[in-house]
Image (tube, each protein chain N blue to C red):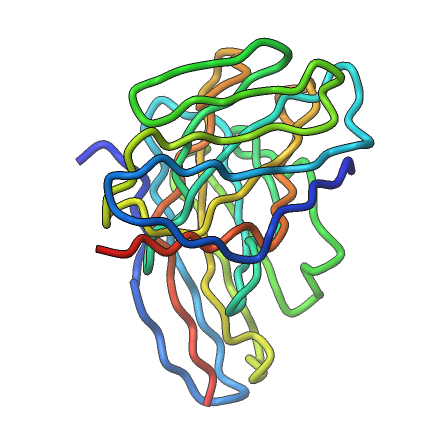
Length: 116
Length: 111
């Protein structure tokens, strides 16, 4: 499988706990994006990496959220002190190095977080 | 970010064509029109994109108005597997920009 992999697919956690999600992009893709999606809404941009550099962060990414991509390959998204409002689907997408205007995004299937 | 407006939902019968509209009156000259769709419990997947000319691929066709202020995604023969949320997105030519998703159009396909 050469798609974008996300782990875990589902996570249930108690309020106040920390959670970490992992994204493995397509191997030759140097760009990686995190999005959050709540029920009935389109995905909302959180942050963007080019290789290991985090180039853009949305204001949605509060100080409880941190994302890393230490070697420019896989990425992790950590949420500290989870709140019920963090319950959502967290999507990862990757894009290739070459400049293409078309199908340059491949999304994973997401991690569904439920905070109880 | 340039905005798009789409109907919240549409219905189609199986094996009939579906025309999904999108208005983008504030589109700029360098904005590409992208369509993605999201099947239940999946991440969005690419459908088609275009700049000025109509486009066809194995999944769909994209018809772009001459003034580029609207576009239509055409599924030539809807199948039950086409039931999904369809997003029309404008993306600047600056390649690294992220996508700005709206709520999209939820397409139901009736057998």
